[in-house]
Amino acid sequence: MGRVEGKVAFITGAARGQGRSHAVRLAQEGADIIAVDIAGPIPNLDYPHATPEDLAQTVKEVEALDRRIIATQADVRDRDAMKKAIDEGVAQLGHLDIVVANAGICILRPWDEVTPEIWQDTLAVNLTGAWNTVQLAAPHLITAGGGSIILTSSAAGLKGLPFLTPYVASKHGIVGIMRAFAHELAEHNIRVNSVHPTGVDTPMGSGDGTQRMGDLIGAHPRLGGMFTNSLPIDITEPVDISNAVLFLFFDEARYVTALTMTVDAGNTQY
Amino acid sequence: MGRVEGKVAFITGAARGQGRSHAIRLAEEGADIIAVDIAAQIDSVPFPMATPDDLAQTVKEVEALDRRIVATQTDVRDYAALKAALDDGVAQLGRLDIVVANAGIGSFGAAVDLEEQAWQDMLDVNLTGYWHTAKAAIPHLRAAGGGSIIMTSSAAGLKGYQHLAHYVSAKHGVVGLMRTLTNELGPDMIRVNSVHPTSVNTDMIHNKATYELFAPDLENPTKDQLVERFQAMNILPIPWVEARDISNAVLFLASDEARYITGVTLPVDAGSVVK
Image (cartoon, rainbow over all chains, first blue to last red; front, side, top):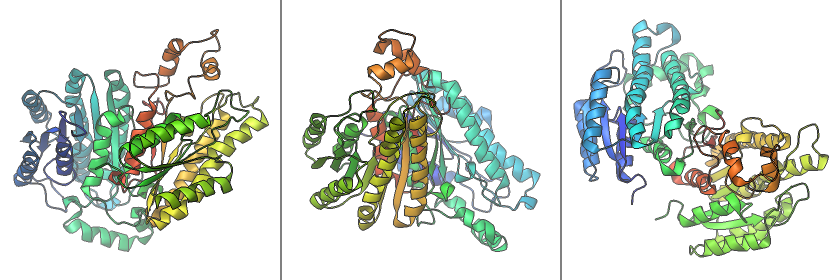
């Protein structure tokens, strides 16, 4: 029997990367999935955006595990579309037990090249999108008698990694809403935690951003050390974050709440 | 296949309570166990400590799971004895992968009134004992090519509580030890994390001395009368957690599922640290 048999999970940003990995890992352990992803462009990204084909691939991989999945192309900034996707998913799968607010963007720029558009888009997707996700999904968890909410923050949610001003602000903000929701939702037996990865091997780390990062560290060598991990590895895999999400999911972590859970190879302690 | 199949875990304070629970939970998932416990009284502790019979019960429960266990009556304050017990266990079981520094004591008193001996016993067991445990284990973990060290701290390792100055100091000290070892041992792929329970449903809280601390206004307080007072410390509406809840966190940190998690202070505290 799977560790989350019969549970239903709502995951944002599920078309690929960490989101797809969470969907597959939770499905392996018996959960059904409600998935959303913008699966479309956002300005200024240095890496390729997710596509409807990516989201279809997530559907295929979950169904190959004999689990059900309701996937919708929806933008976490669009409250009406989000509410519809959640409500319809719950109507079809029967209930909701876990929420993974994972959809995010990361635009690498030194502080003086961050435009108002980059600032606003990053906060809107990463922070307001997470708030939309939690606020709109929580009523279903209350109906279910409790549940678990996991917000994807970052090592940049705990330390001020360079060349990422709006990203750092949004990911620190995730810690704030995680802590606030943890208190307000505790009376409903809902736990709220955040996960904080170091670098993860996903499409977010591909494209022109890799070159840009190398150039910026070359120009500001004293800051490069901030990306160093304590463990002798350069990058983690999406499944490592998914395993932390799985742990925080249900009964084994039934009394764990308001935790900033690093999966960062020691980056924030180094 | 178990989640820690084929691994060997060293657990201090394994005669009862959380330590026994860790031994059983890890054994359920396929680990063999090296167990130590003082299994004797320390005079400054105002409630009964574990006995040799308790340690024998842990052995029985692990063996009932068809796992091997090497148990020794050893005081974590005695480095030479602790090292000998661990080395013997590794010689018998072949390797070491997981270390759970768990042996701890409790006592109470306002900082201004604490006896010198109570302060010293607390630091000796709850902090120096952890360093001894890590020091003895590190060479074995290096020989295995990596591993996971889990230190039982406490909610009191992250915030202060009245009448526990010595306990709070030791448990905060464990966080400092954990964070330093994280950086020293990272290059060897040895991960170091701490767990931070709120009150756990074990003999360490269910005793006359602890009840009187929580209810100085009541004569002969009972468990039922204490529920509300313990619950007031947590965000989730529960008075205490079970030893198995801590074991599940230990299991996760010990397993390969947490292979890149190091330097974490993991509360299993029903939210008490952030309350």
